[in-house]
Length: 261
Image 1 (cartoon, one colour):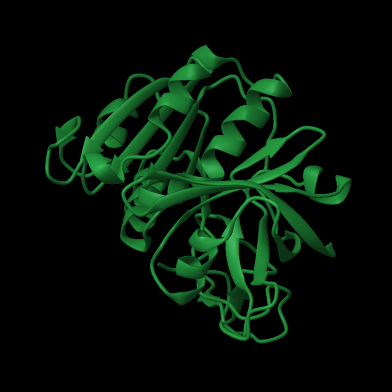
Image 2 (cartoon, one colour):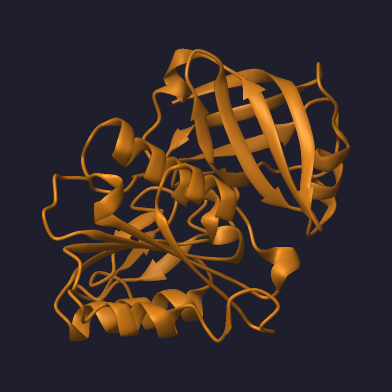
């Protein structure tokens, strides 16, 4: 973990209110694991006072990292206004990433909305390290509408079968992404599922995994102030004993059997 002033190489609008920023940074951040995150502070800005967490979206070898983000408030609004050549202050890599082992039973990668951010990094890493082949991986992307659908072309470029759903039916089937996941899980079931998205989606995916006895790891989104376990502001209730876990330190990736949704 380091604190680094990272130079912005590009900061581009992807669609609607979503942006992708590419940052020049050192080897420690380039060596991050899929599922880890960074805490960002805007250099020279008094507000927002506290850092904000962002998943690492991609690693650009020899260059730096990419972050995919949605403009939802003051911090992300100001981040969207930053230009190439400027610097932002980042702390990372932080947290625990996705457990990865060679798996003969196939993999399901499930993403809802901006929860797709760490899943492209995960997919590229799995293929690069030959943990699985493209034919072993099936991607499920859910969004509110066509305008909120992210990274479909990136997954197709990797040769991954990709299932699309939107709430309004503007792209793919009009249903929750958990519907095709449950339908596909029976023919045949994967060896492991990885998921990131809204809490309701993760709860449903965890329930499916438990019913069909499939290993499942979920990346939990949470507001946090420090990113290192000091402020205790990102607590989630554990299913193991009478205690709480913290997204920044114990996660953000958890075994779905270990936490309550």
